[in-house]
Length: 231
Image (cartoon, rainbow, N blue to C red; front, side, top):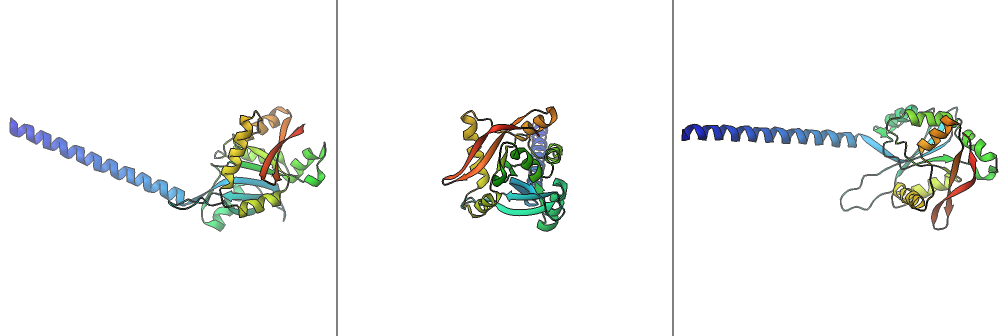
């Protein structure tokens, strides 16, 4: 009886050990797949949209998050610019040139380029559409893209060149800076519009409040316009 009991205990121990080994191997395999996935993708934290040139619909500026290694300081986003017809074209072009898949799953900010010299009570509406060639098309692309969170903030920027220069020279992650800036505004009761707000305004033909990203001496500020815009 004792010998049979010992055999059963030994068999049980071997079965448990085998299970643990297999589970560990599976976890290791999954981790490898996850790491491989991360290594094969670049994650954009900033997307700036301007009117396209060279017969392309859009000029996209991407701020790509840089990896932070242990013991290193956080690095600024890597900036790249692309002339494309749509977001699918952007993903294809990015992959072809960079050798990695582009992910928009972690966007912290989407900016629409606006021309400060032509702003007045009616020009803001015109420049939104003109600057992006078709805001409806852009919103539709963002809506169809399953990666893009519809709670991503969407603002106008008055001086896109100054913004690009800022991103390129800054030594800290710009995406985090603007994320904190927007959160502070929301704590003060300012409802900064998200993609979903633009989509709702477009579908229901309702006005939406416009928020402008503007350069100041201390950095950047977000101002609410005294007017509303119909998309």
